[in-house]
Figure (spheres, helix red, strand yellow):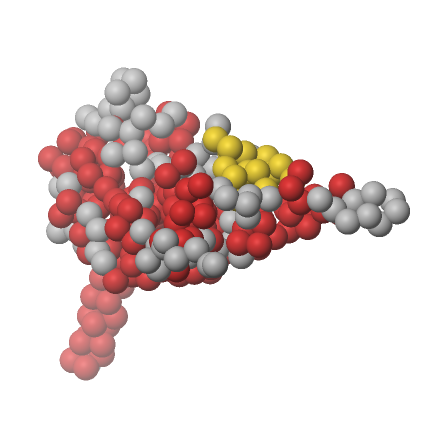
Amino acid sequence: MPDTSYKSYDSYMANLYESGTSSDVQVKALGTTYELHSLLLKRSPYFKCLIEWNKEKNSSDDDTLFNEQSLVLNVELDDPLITKDSFELMLKRLYGIHDCRKEKEIRAEMIATAFFFQMEDIKESMLEYWLRNSEGTRGVIRILQMVDSHDYGKYGTRLMNKCKRFLYDNGWKSGYGAWLGIKPSLIPEIVNANEFFVPNEFERIMFAVNILQDSEADDDEIELAITKFRESFSFFRLKYSQQRELLKQRLPSGKIIFDLSSFRGTTAAARRQSPPSHNFAILVIIVILIIHIRWLM
């Protein structure tokens, strides 16, 4: 007689995952061995490829059937965002078990895990959740850095643009303390954008300076970010008091962030590219005088 002890298909699948009954594959990952089932694992393109590759590798020359009961898969996870929790939630998805609440609590880890194991449904659900729900600046920056450091294709681009739009509108209002941990290379890209809301240009540069002062990155990374700001920042348009305030800023190491000589070269070049405005005014006055004299004659 069929086993009728399970109230539903979901409870049956949950028990199958937990108990490992009739398992034909061992998966070793993150220090744990999982007794699983190849038929369900193959729902993941990653596992499907891995199982089929092992099948070809272990098949004998006389074409005897491959015994999947002996199959052991060692999975090396090189992405630090993939945790034991996100990995197990992904495995449960393969068994048809969805724990939406837990998945949303660790959405960054779930996105990283979904990309590694090529789980399109998880990627879509996590990305859609992000697109529908605004998060605080800290959470947005965490996701932004995850996407920036990995190639997540078009899904990564969508999420990157969503994060940038959020920071353009809310980044300055959140205060620079909420930006703790952001990569220095991302600061000019976001804070220097025209779309970034900030009251004035002095507030823009000081906001970036405050973030860099709290950064734990190497001085070389910080210097590269500062250089990008210099390329488009007009120091001599600031008030004298603002210039003095900016030139006083230092990194925790004691290194001066900006010095006057770093601005003089770019400013002099800009001046050489356009004629002084007072020369043009003098020329206009001379032309008017000549016309007036001729009219009197």
